[in-house]
Image (cartoon, rainbow, N blue to C red; front, top):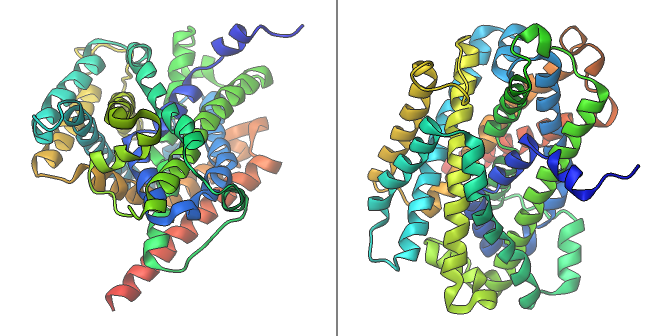
Length: 424
């Protein structure tokens, strides 16, 4: 019997939330800068990365569903503690910087709405307090229900694409035929795109979300959670593929729109939120700033708790501490202290007058450099029969996850190489 569309929608959970959060302000800022600087030159990455990111997120979910524990604990059980510790530390630093950049972007969105009457830096602490209040006193599902509608503003890029005068032949070519340039600027942009699409924080968030879902279903012990049925795995895959498809569709149209509207008219250097918002003018005219601000605020408020939350999950799993977002702060003070500290450091970054739009791009580059070693450990873990039993990676999954690891590692090494050459 065919399922009713609403029954399919009810199956969506951690994967959809992960996909929505992947188009955070860091993603919006990176894709906007890439489209304005290189035109259609990196449009192919949207199609290329979709199967890779879906395979990686499916692997992270499958590890959690099979083992019954989060990614941090699974990695520590399999690999040397010092090696996993270095990776977790790199993740914490990357997440904190990313959270700070996203807080700055939320504030930049607020400043757009205020039409410059309020300095961006003034709006960072209120944004951080709002997000901390939700994390400390409400479930993340509440945040998602409240702010998910603001993320629909991102679909304005889809509509704008039809109002822009894009060259159809160039568009098709750029979508399906990869274009590469062996220079530092292009390789940096490629690493940024890969880093904001296949982001390390999403690996841990996906796995921890699956474990929390099992706990909510009444499976409170690791022994009860261990092992996943094929039917449950199919539901998780449907959820993840849907979320990643949403994420990459938005990515595609942000690059397309900024290329057609900004790059085509000689605006190749985005430095402010106002300049980035100009990409939506063909659709919204003088009200483009409203759509862009809504996108920054909505995705920022959705993504920042995931960034600080995934950092807390990774560290507490590595240290074998209890705690999750369903627990009350007074019962798990250490877990929530990590979240608060990460947020406070993010606020401090902005008080040091960090350029919010530039910081979003730099964040993506950092994620692109941190991801390869983590991916290597995760792929090896997923292929280990002693850990995964009958749910080891094989066939297409193994090919795609190794491809993601190899491509991101090569891009990171190429960036290091071109940077060293440029400085010599």
